[in-house]
View: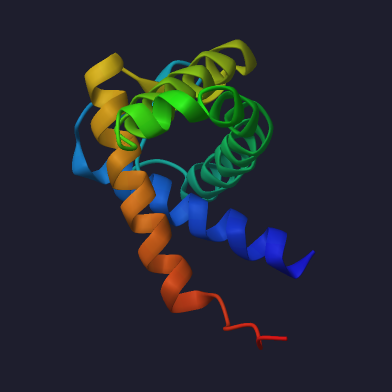
Length: 137
């Protein structure tokens, strides 16, 4: 449970950094963009956390299936297909969020592509800093 909470917080912070860059990835509620500086801060934080959980669920289920099925193509493209898969997963989360009415909004493939790269890098860096090292067996 502690690991899940830490991963959710790391993903939420990475989503916040991704939206702060301003590349066409935003956090929305009722069709209006949310920012940390304006409006209700708690609504922004809650939306980030819910979006991080949704992104983690999509990445953990659909993302694993797609990566497993496309493994030969990952090898053939030397891993570059992973960038496209991550962008498509971000677009899928954006679509799911639009159904719910709040969450992530991505303007198109290329903002999703660059957003996925930023999200991955920030998540990786925060994971290195915040996750404790597990002892080796």
